[in-house]
Image (cartoon, rainbow, N blue to C red; front, side, top):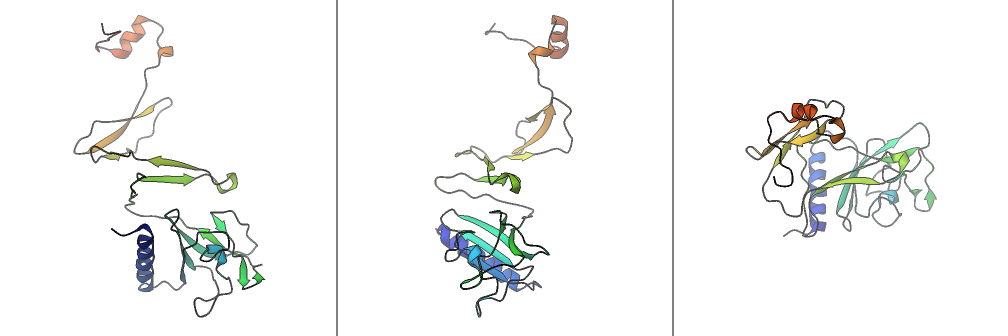
Length: 216
């Protein structure tokens, strides 16, 4: 079995090979020490003025693949030089620490976290963590996330298929029973006790359904 660190290195190597064979003109740099902190391999430790012969001075369009083996997270950043100075807002905007060894960076460039678009995105698991995906709040509000995670054990493979219809006020999401391992989403209006004032209203809502109370 390939270890987590080797998987990260393999992924970086594969991406570098694919980009090298394309018409991409910018640099593609690896960073295996996370985004900030200035330590060896960190994104903000990459010298903006370059470090020949390893890499040239950073320019708009350069890409960095940032991997952190301790967290098993990989992120993609693009360097962008703005007309005005940019402010750091980790993990979304990362400024280089230095122009060259011992010289602080004072330019208008910054590493900007990239969006990822794909036809199919798979979330792999480990022995202790099920597949999950998360999203950040607005950069100005902080770095808290909301995570969606699958169960630790899944009985059957199921696809949840959303519909294009929008809900009306008060409707909630429901799912059909699996058909060929596909559950189709729908919108339903929930039965709310506060909406029922008479037996006539109750009869209208439930129609010919059989009502059971306390097992009777």
